[in-house]
Length: 181
Length: 181
DNA sequence: TCTATTATACCGAATGTTCGTTTGAATAAG
DNA sequence: CTTATTCAAACGAACATTCGGTATAATAGA
Image 1 (cartoon, each protein chain N blue to C red):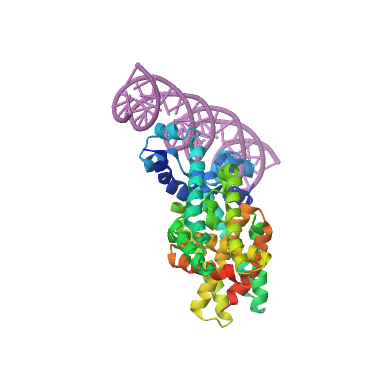
Image 2 (cartoon, rainbow over the protein chains, first blue to last red; image 1 turned 90 degrees about the vertical axis):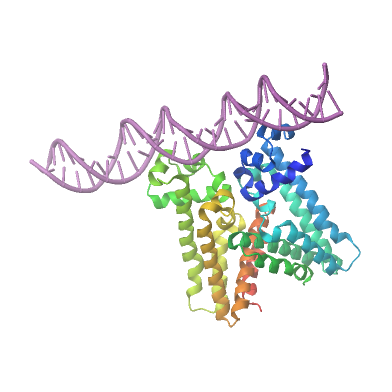
C-alpha cells in the first residue's frame, strides 16, 4: 500500500483520540498495516505519523477550502463555496478539528508552531476576503477571528450535543460575520 | 491533606493534558501526594479523580457563574457579572475548557453523559436570561448556543495564538449576543 | 490516667499491563 | 539476486494499580 493511501486512514484516529490518546495499535488496525509496516513508512514513529497527517490536512484545506476563494466570482459566492468545503471537512461538525485536538498536552509541545502557522493562514485568508469588500483592515481582522471562533466553538458544541443542526446554523452565519461592520 | 484540597490541585493537569494525557505520576507531583496516597483517596483510580474534578468544577460554576444571574439587578448587569466569572474561570482563555478536553477519546466514553448534562445546564441558564428580556424561546435558545459557541471557540483560538485579547473581545460580546434578535 | 485498639493518612516497592519501538525472518516484486 | 514490503515476536520503558507497611491521632477500656 502506497504512503498516500495510508495517511488518510490515520486521520480519524488522531482526530477522535488526540495525539496521546491514539495508540499505534489503533493506528495499525485503522490502516490494516501491522505495526512494523507502519514503522517502515514512518521511521519517526507516531510523531512522524501525526506530522504527516497535519501536512496532508494542510494540503486538503488549501485545495478544498482556500482554492474556492481565489476565483473571479462575487465575494459572497466564494464564501458560500468555502463554507461547503468546511462542512465537508468537519463532516457537519461530527469530526473534531485538529487545531483543537493537537493543541493539548504533549502534542502541543510537538506541533504548536505548525498549528499556529496553520491558524494564521486561515485568519489571514479570511481577513483578506473581508478587506476585498471594502472592510477596513482592523475590522476585517476581527471579523476573521470571529468567523474562526464560530467554527471552532460549533465543533465543540456538536461534539457534546451530537446536534449537527447547530453546526449548520453556525456555518451559515460565516459569510455575514465576515462581511459585517 | 484533606480531599477538598487535593482536587483543586488535580484540575490543571487534566485541563492541560486531557484525560489520557494526564498520568498518575503527573497528578502525584501536582498534588504533592505519592501515587499510593492518591489511590487512598480515590479508590477508583484516575477515572474517579477525573470524576471528582468534574463535580468540583460543576459546583464552582454553579457558585461563581450561575449564582450572579439569580440576583435582582438588571439583566445586563447580571450578564456582565457572569462574564467576569467566565473570565476568571478560564483565566482569560489560557486554561482550556473541560467540556472540550474531556469530550475526546476514551474520556468521552467515560464522561459523555456528565458533559452533555453540564452543557445543557449552561445553555438552559443562558436561554432563560434571554427569555427574561422578552426574547422569544426559539431565538433565546439560538442566542444561548451562539454565546456558548463564542466562549468555546475563543478558548481554542487563544490556546493556539496565545493572544488573550481575542478572548476578552469575545467575552465582551456575550451580552449582546444573548440579548440580540 | 495509662494502655490497647482502631481508623486515618501516607509511602516505598512491586504488580501486571500496555505503550511505542525494534528485530530478524518471510514473502513479493522487479 | 536484489530490493522493497510485510509480518510475528519480543524489547525496554512507562503506565495504572496494588501491596505491605509505618506514622499519627483519635477512641475506648481498665
